[in-house]
Length: 388
Ligand SMILES: Cc1cc2nc3c(=O)[nH]c(=O)nc-3n(C[C@H](O)[C@H](O)[C@H](O)COP(=O)(O)O)c2cc1C
Ligand SMILES: [Fe+2]
Ligand SMILES: [Fe+2]
Image (cartoon, rainbow, N blue to C red):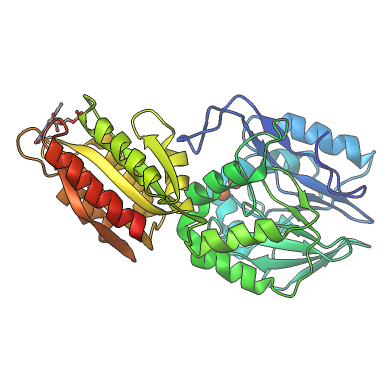
C-alpha cells in the first residue's frame, strides 16, 4: 500500500496510529511506521517483521504479494520487539521458512520466544556474508549498537538498496508524510544518540558501497540525492551542532525562573546569538528539547531549587542529555531558590561530567523574582553567550 522499494520489492509494513508513545516514553502524535519489505525473486525473502498486534495485517500483505508461492527466508536485521514481535507468526505459517540473522540475534530468539525452538531453522550470518535469491544478491554487515548489539544491515547489489535497520528511521506514520529532518532528528538523538561512534563505524564500513536507496525500519524509503541524509547522520553521530544558536531550556513552578528564561532569550536575540529556541520543560515535549539541544551550539538551563535538589523536570532533561552523550557545547546556568538556592551548582555537577562542555559565565542566581541586579547579570551572560 505504501512505499514499495521497487516492483520486485513491495512494502509489507504497517502504520500504527494507536500508540501514543514510542518506547513507552516518546510522544508520537503522528503514529509510527514499522517497515517490512519482501524481495520477490527465484527465492523469496521477507525483511523483518512488525510490532505486536500488527501481525495479521503483515501476513495478509505478504500473502497478497506471494501469489501462492512460499517465502524462503525471514531476514532479521534487529531483534527489538517493534520489529521482531511477529516472527513466530511467520514461522508457524510457513514451516520451511528459515531465519537469517546475526549470531547474537539468533541467541536472542529464545529469549523473546522461550516456547519456540528455531535452532534448526536459523542461519547466522557474519560481516560480509552473502545470500543470493536469484537476480538479487544480499551482503550482510554487522552494525553493533546501531541500536542494539545484534543489529545487521544488508545491501542488495542489483538495485543498490541499503536495508538500514533503525538507522535513517523517523517518528511518524507513512500516512503522515512530513519533512524528514525534524522527526528523523528527534528519533535519532533520542533512540540511537548514545551510539555515535558505532554509527560512524557502519558509515565507514559502507564507504565505497554505492547506495541508491535506503530502506529503513521506520519512516519513508529514501531515494534520489542521499547526501543531505548522510550529512545529517555524519553531524549527529559526531555530536556536532547543526547551526549556531542557543536552546533556552527552563522549568518553573511560579514563573520566576520562566521570566528569567524569557528575558535572556530576548537578550540573546537582540545580540545576534544565532537561532534562539525556548522550551518549557514542564509542558513541551522533552524529547524535542533533547533534539534541539543537540542541534544548536549552545544551551542555557534555568531551574528552581527543589527540596535542596534540581527541580524534577530539569533533572530528567539533564539525565536524558547525559545518557544520550550530550557533549561539545557551551552552557550557561540560571538557578532560582527562595532560601538556599543550590540547583545551579547541582546542574553544573551533572553537566561537567560530560565531555567538551564549556560553561559560560556568570551563573545567575534568582532569589524568587528577578531584580535589577539579576537583569544586569543576565545581560552579562547574554553578552558572553553571544560572543562564543
Ligand atoms: C516543594 C518545593 C521545594 C523547594 N525547595 C527549595 C529548596 O530546597 N531551596 C530553595 O532555596 N528553594 C526551594 N523551593 C523554592 C523555590 O525554589 C523558589 O520559590 C523559586 O523561586 C521557584 O521558582 P519559580 O518561580 O520559577 O517556580 C522549593 C519550592 C517548592 C515548591
Ligand atoms: Fe531499535
Ligand atoms: Fe525500531
